[in-house]
Length: 94
Length: 137
Image (cartoon, rainbow over the protein chains, first blue to last red):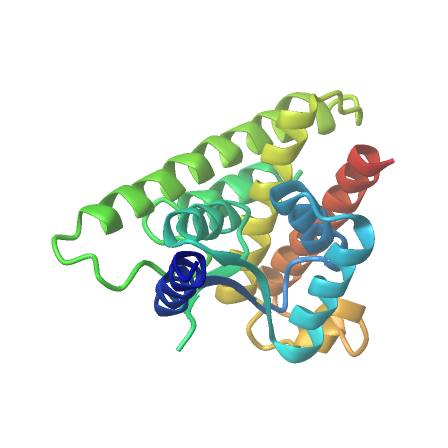
């Protein structure tokens, strides 16, 4: 009767110890807003509204976290964004 | 036409990229760095070659452009890289706001190199806008 809760607890603890990696896009003064929106839609499959929201975060706040998850996939996203000439970096949650 | 000038700027991207490529920090043997940078440079070289081909063979002659989606994307990336490099190399004296809005820019106050750089910067932005409109329209 107690096995299920213990398993659940163990699983949760393991997930908590693996902090997700974040793909962060930094502002640059050159790339067009429409270009950044298009890249976000293309790379992440965002709808226009979500892509525009992230673009405005980059523009106004200087950075936006556009994706979070496992490291391998995060690295692939950063690399793809850099191919599109965006300033993308990889960060890990503290 | 701007083709030869864009070629000159594109040549400067062979050694150093237009962006600062942040890499994974725990790459102790440098293999990831080597692959990462090599791949970015290769893609950029291909993108720039395609943009230059279009500038030389189509836009400068007929003014028309007929490209596939993949080709349009390559041109967009190349335009972005060339514009970033122009900003770094020739337009550093202009504020972000001036470059974005055009306000406060006085071509008469620029030397010939700056004029050419700013003209090319603007033309490539216009080309990007046309391509994006076509892709998303």
